[in-house]
Image 1 (spheres, rainbow, N blue to C red):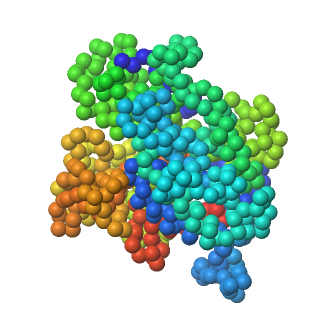
Image 2 (image 1 turned 180 degrees about the vertical axis):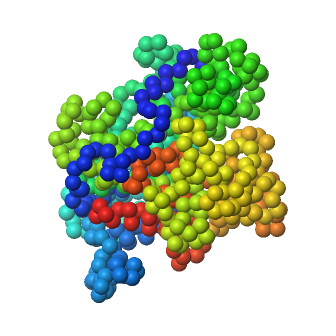
Image 3 (image 1 turned 120 degrees about the vertical axis):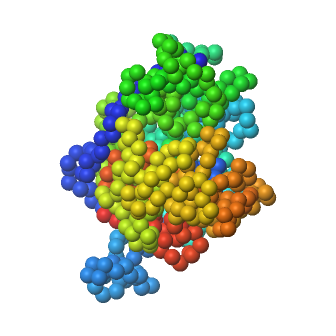
Length: 586
């Protein structure tokens, strides 16, 4: 049973969007940045290899746009190519300066189990060290994860340095940069932790002044280390994160964080008994989370909503009913926690909004992201503080592209800027337990129904005869095991995958009946996978909403995965939107 869980709630329950001008003052806009530090946060859990491949195919677009900008004709709004000497046609000018100083680093969403037996070398299941990347920069071979890829000065990241100004000099060949960048993306892999902590991963790498070195058992009353303690707590400081941050992050750079994930964030709080949210076993038996009291189902914000394991809750009608283990699939431990368990084990999204918009931490010290040269006590910035306008957050996440595109019928027209996005439809308000108004963005085990307010598309029910009954997510499905959620959107695989012979993760290996990923055009089902999926991402989207105009939202469900010449191919629209958002700072 649970003890009194120390959640240490330090943030407001209601998301406060950042003001358009940022969060660190009203100073004049900073001068254009000549350096960019690009950090990719890649989900490396099962089912992500396909999406990593698509992102890798977009790497040439990103590099080309940054190192060889195009020309813009303001009168015609046309984009033109410069000549071989970089000169623009008459009447046009370069969209931005050619970038000559670029750091590129990759971290993953795998931070382990924060003290639980999941994603741990103590787990009673096969273990991969990639489940505990701990926000360390990763540059591993996509064909052999044990082999590192070459990085600048063995620092774990790439350095574009065509002028040879670095010590030692960085990469001067755009072709080599593209190849290594794409390999780093693919090398993230898909054998990481299934509890994706993408938000906490970049927070740990960029912001946390003392990222912990390890999680240890602690005494729940005192918080002190105890070998047989029922709680867990952080111990020590991770020197790898601090060293890599110092090498990677420059005080005068434009910082761009790009998150790629097909599931929502699951950043569990560290400390107390929060680790139980990810616990798989109690001895030799599966660990089953106690349910929440009756109030949790309909009024989770009520003080009457709490865990049935807490003193005085046992007489509640919901707590007196026998607990069915099928109510608590480990795969869904981060979904609707307050409604189901009476406790929210996750860090509030405001933690991450503040991290990107406020230059001071809660204790009043300077944030390492806003000041890379802090005094020993963190009270003084001894360098030049970063302006919040020099931070950009992009998310390629689970949201249908039709809901965020300028033209819901044609992604080639581009993506909407954050100021024009239908936030209530795609994100709702998770902090207030308000679901999105788009039925495709509602996180649910049960089949959903309704009409999307943006596109007018109806949700197709389970049993639809076509895998494209809904152009957004195929159709709903029955989930008798109650161990998965309905899809927000789906995308075509470039090449169908035969799960019977595929050596890696495959969604159609078993339980494929009724799943639109495994359905042929004639309506039948089998073990060949034709499509990939993504789930609603309300936490990622809420943080992007809070960041305001310095956010870029794109769909991980690519509209076109086959026509490489199309403007809608793969994640090309996402790259286009990210580069456009960067240009004012360059």
